[in-house]
Length: 468
Image (cartoon, rainbow, N blue to C red; front, side):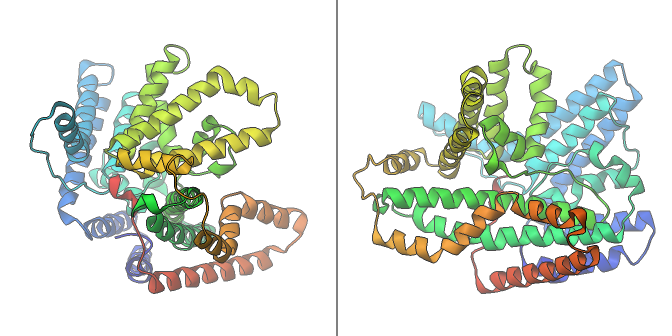
């Protein structure tokens, strides 16, 4: 099941609300969340619930072992056990096929390639449970002694299949003592409606155009169409990823959980370093706190640490070499900024560093899109006018005219324009609070109606998180 579906919007979520708020008993509410998370996750692949239960059980036990034997060899055994089991499961189900296929390609072998169906969300909940056991080992959180509460943390459907990566330390207090206010519910509904709108109005519209350009015969593309398709994909992936994060954060607020922000308008960044402080923040901070800093961070072997982190960041996004190249691409950019470009950027107008980042980020999405490296090479040839194809055509002009208003809206929504206007209105009582609240409710209704109309009227509604 996905958030951007009629079943979720008009059956699953209302039923979850009704059952959850029918009692104030905390244990009852926890059970309701677990049951609905089971239903949500099992909607497409019920068999993989077993894997999630195994992963949660292993880390629940290891957390207790680490706490009991803190400072002794038993704690280290518990931590190593957690890492081996979790990374082992992730390696088997997500990367074994990629590993065997790479061996066949490199050494001309005929090894049987495992054909596992990737358990949706395994990359997210694996990192969540790893962060739990590491934090218990570091004595930054206490081990959770209730398996039911721990399993609720692991299985919460709000962020289970699309993030953000929620650490136990972020919501430990709310697992035991969460309070839900009308302000929370209102804020959560607004955030969810915005995220849903971003997904169906921006991401889906862009994605449908992108597939028309990039999934067919590339030789028929003009250079202008190639750039237009790449810009469209840049919007698609931003609005899809950030839209799902908005919906997850909104759902959490509706049920008393306050998840951390995951996207902070990355396209206004002025460097690759700044971009990754704003893009998929929960993933970037995970690798920083649990890999980069333990390796030595900026203090020892900076460039080695950087490349290891970005190799793994790329690989986390998908079991294919293009994702590894995409990760290393950003790693090299950040290394160049550290060594040279930051000094240059400090001496020139910020406009130029912003243009540099936009060009670099958009170009990087080509590497992310094409899992077939030969098609990626062909696309770059078209992009830079080396293929002999036309630079522009009449059809592109017509499409740009037809989508000019949509493109303008996409640009505005990818910048912090709405938060700026909201802040300006609320400051110095430029608008009365009750008028603002009524207006916000009306906007939420409009966004929900428009989103529903798009879900009914269009069949294109991809789920980009199938790789995770």
